[in-house]
Image (cartoon, rainbow, N blue to C red):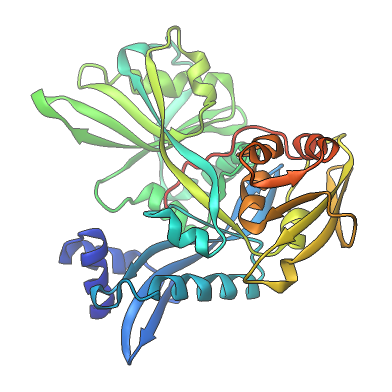
Amino acid sequence: MSAVADILMHAYAMTPADCIAWRQRLDPRDLRLLREGGKVAGTLVSIRKGQWFGGRSVPVVGVGGVGVSPLHRGQGTATRLMTRLVQEARESGAALSILYPATQPLYRRAGYEQAGARYETRVQMSALEMGERSLSLRAIESRDEDAIAACYTSVARFRQGWLDRSEFSWNRVRNPRSEPVHGYLVEGSAGVEGYVYLARRPLKDLKQELALTDIVATTPAAARRLLRFLGDHHSLGTEVVWYGGPDDPFLLMLREQSYSVKVYMHWMVRVLDVVSALEARGWTPGLSGSLHLEVTDELFPENQGRFVLEVEDSVARVKRGGEGRLRLDIRQLGPLYTGFQSAASLRSVGLVEADDASVQAAMALFSGPQPSLRDMF
């Protein structure tokens, strides 16, 4: 692990204490090392999880902590590391791989492309006085974790791109690396109706910023109660910050547009298996149609060639063959798949070749809310 720590300190400007904390949080089974010349040349973390598309959880491998030894940079080490990772991920049965890029060219060489974003939302505490205190609010206890996970899932499955969280992801919500977090939940007649995890960050002039690692509500009353709870901190702070999508429904409950929403970082997707990825996700109920694809993939011959996608009753079937009317590289299939870019947009910049009928069919089939992520990994 000393070699891994040395790589991380150089790649991410981490301190020795940061590396120790990182190691303690990591399941050793998720660590991948690339050895060259008998020494550790590169490292990354491979995390199995799910990602919600069309109301169904698609098996994915999340990638984090990618780093290369200073002595091995500029020699293709990172490309070899990522190539082996996507090969392993496909063999494990994952349909997709996702990551947050520090640099895009490396990951594009491995077949990744921008496919969604993590948005930062900032709200003035003074705007959160909802006048709602009817529901009970209390501190979260360990016995509440299953109910909270169910509460999250009931919302996340309808948020395009959100994680079907593994224990790794929940640990980041409840125990982020750099600051203590406190959790509170709202209870109604049906049990847990919402919750929030927050950290208090000191600012200048003795004020605080409330940084939320998660906030979810399943009823209007729970949403108002949580917002009022956050607003009750206005004498101590100025802003509340959380992460998610560009269309956060909490913002519709505010009286004025006293908030800002901006892209924090784009995330990238690599389609590992064309057939399983298309068949694993959900599709708009009542929508049916077909699409003739022709895909190029330099790494996986199994993804290469023509496919016919047929969607009916929210279920997709993919078979080999067809006319290949919509032609694209495996990279461009990522943003099309998530709904981040339409077929028309991709065609307009030369990343897709297709006739108008195929473009319209693709736009209908892959339509939906903008894909986003709340979690980092």
